[in-house]
Image (cartoon, rainbow, N blue to C red; front, side, top):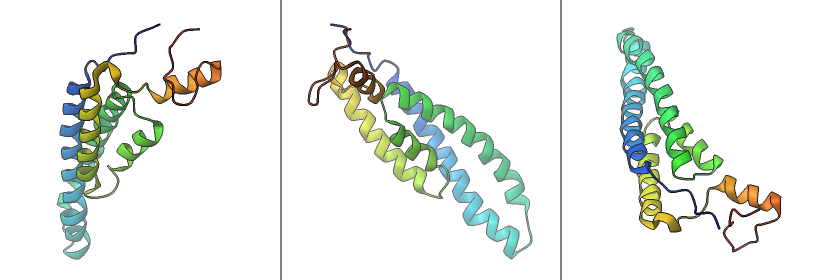
Length: 140
């Protein structure tokens, strides 16, 4: 029986994700709640001209950290999609960061007993080696 893939590097990936979630969340909040009202209400586009491109650059870095963490923490595609979309709505990044941090901390605490990645379960089901309630063994 093959050993399950470890969650090695997950704590570092979580720290990177959390930092980028805060940066992207703050940038989007400043852009939406300060920059846009100043641009359209007071005709001062300076904040949008500075924060907008910075938010775009940091959002791309945030996407990379989401992919890294989702792969290491064995997240499903739907969970990854939730992380990605949280950079689109103001203040949602802060809620999602707390939710993701709690989930990853629980997975890290389980160690090798953590459930397999969704892709591993799907691959085992396609091979016919998986049965509901039984973790895939990885044997062919």
